[in-house]
Length: 120
Image (cartoon, one colour):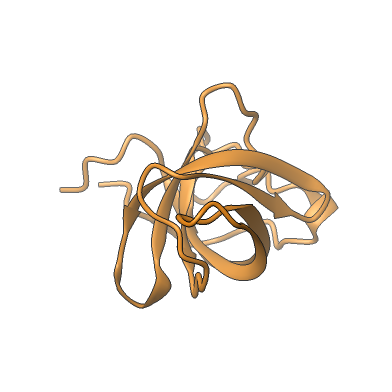
């Protein structure tokens, strides 16, 4: 049984990330984001030297928000969680029943339906 607090969308999108690496140098790069919820996601193919606890900015289309890295995985994976004061940038209303319109905004050009994952 999955104990996640929010439903996740099984999708993969390019996003821009930037911040300061563990050496205190600024970085910016395009990475892939997957396993998305309103409160977080998994970044894939991160090349910058970041670590758990680091804050970074994430931009999807014209929307951007600050996140904190909560875990690091193999091959450039990083789990990120939105900072409490930040509005969700993924434009998702996941509170509706599965199989209904989940509210992905047309502003980022996403299809209206996705497979839900990690909902227990």
